[in-house]
Length: 530
Image 1 (cartoon, rainbow, N blue to C red):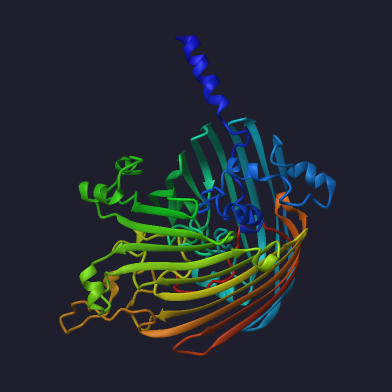
Image 2 (image 1 turned 90 degrees about the vertical axis):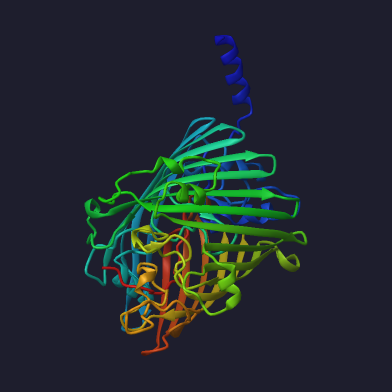
């Protein structure tokens, strides 16, 4: 028996890829690999991020240029290195104008490291701390939420804030069909700049991710531990705990067509009236979560989503998402804006190397999310973490169009990103569905008895506001495998409320930046957290 077990272990290990672990969750670093995987007949479940290194390693080590400084290249290494690491530095300075004209800076330092403990096991950790004076429109967001976008609680009274972030994981590739990752970080489901399912917009969280790949199918089970920080004044001991269980199924129906299925349930796990911790009813990796939710009689918040992606030509991809929180076809057909019809959809396309321009990526995208999407009657169970949406940063009650162009030329990178959105702006004491941290029962009354108004909830109601964002950025890689570059950027944001004064901001910055993960500057205040 012992000989048989040893032989089986050897056979399993022989199937293992030589490259364990996860690729950084950074579109700028992923870009050359994504462009190859989006080509017709090339494989890769690109809607599941961060990518497995086993997926990107066969595409070649030369897609990212070598570091400018040799010692950084030795630290960062290549995809076959057992040890990798490097500094994470943000030393950006400039000026922002809007309410006033002030200096804007970002001063941060940290380190990242990974170690291939075994051909099947990777250990990874990174951490950074910043002192920052934000761009004018982001400073408004920090004042409203108390959170630096995607980077933790903003300590300080302003305009200067200190915040920190750290990520770590152990990733174990048990066979060529399985990857198990446990740690703290972010995940992303979708092909778009945004995701209406799960994005990396929010702060890091502990998670367990199990990826199973069989034939043309990749199936992900994601279990997370999250926090509701309202009323805690930045004290971690007072954060309210919440959990989620998510599934994402990616199925390549053909060389050109991919279908995705998403489901999630979020619950508050420290309710004194319903204590349960992490509900093990949701550990089942294969069943739908909505029947479980009904079966245990729970008040939890479940969401269902679909994705349909089609490769066109040789280097293009059409992508789409449809997400349902609550849905009645009869009310949709009626067209009266029923409050509980909570849906969102995304349509987009990305084209790589158009008209022979190597290294150029062009994207257009539209996102539409109805009022009250992602919220819940118990707002501790909304689709949010650490005061930020888990999907689109605008939350709900908006429609957005965006376009971007990214160009890579050796060590040089250039980006132009533009977005325009129309969204609802609440007035008075009631909610029309734009604030996912307010319950749907905060709707305005329809009669003197105080019964809630169930109809008339459309995009832009009760007052339509508009927001325009544009970013131009150029950079030169110092350490591409470590995400370190010299860059200069210009940000423009215009906020045009339906009521009140319009506001614009301009921000110029130049310096050293670590792009090991994505940062989203195209944001807008939708709510104020206590």
